[in-house]
Length: 358
Image (cartoon, rainbow, N blue to C red; front, side, top):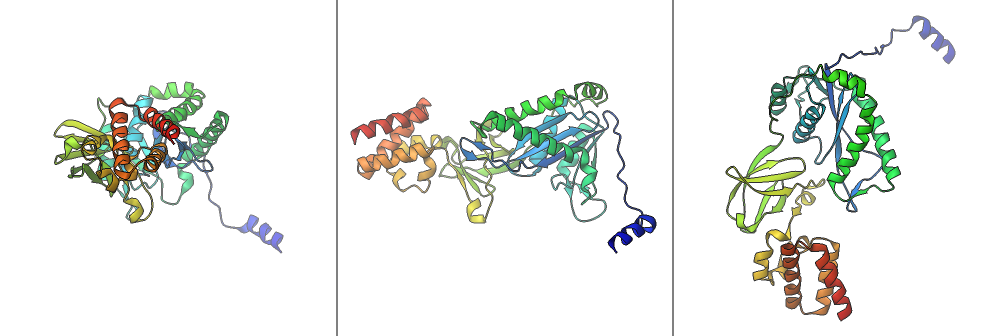
């Protein structure tokens, strides 16, 4: 019976949708998308590194650019990734296509979604026409989606050959990705050279690829940014800071003078978990040295200790001395580590010394 139905459909059935092969002209189209690296866990200094990848590709030549993005599919990630890609390839295509990114479009459900104000400003600055795929029609973005899979397979193979998925810094990981991309781009060098001659010229300067907030530094030498508490140098207490939020860092200004740069952290989960802290003992160690007993009762005690070795050191000190003496020791050790820039060496020296004492 099933065979009869199939034969009937072959002769009398409705026409099916045809997938047409698309031919792109040089300099016509650049595509952007975000993708996740699945199946492997990349770590930075032994800690799982939460991130996504921004992926840009020129449709004609296949030249591509990939960048590590922290914090999800944000406008800041799109803006920084796209601008880095355009400057890396040396020119601007006539059109830039994405899927229905909320960073680029106000997805209100209508047939003609509006550009977000910031994405429209980027497109205007680079003289590029924004286009997007129809929602739910994945094959329309095949020129970038198929590249996602190919690149990620090559990246995973390179990671396995490297023998480790751990990196010392995010910068080292980004450099590793760049080396994989460079090998892929070498295969399309001839077509890319042709396409470069057709790209529009770059503007003389970049448009802002950050968001701007303001915050007053509290008496605790902290600022709150997107529900996360950051310490800043105590000399800034009472100052009103203008903050530039990038996907991976926060830069603070008093007027037009840059006064601080902080690593930006992103925490996923419930509201309680999201209220995280990013405390740097160097910001407050001078004040802590004047009143070391504050270390005993400080809500940030665990955050003030740089890593697991320092937390172990603190436990050793508490076993060797009364709490007040132990607090003086650990604060003085932090002060030396900060002023001499010898964090690892101070911790190792003191752990060995205390071990011999006991």
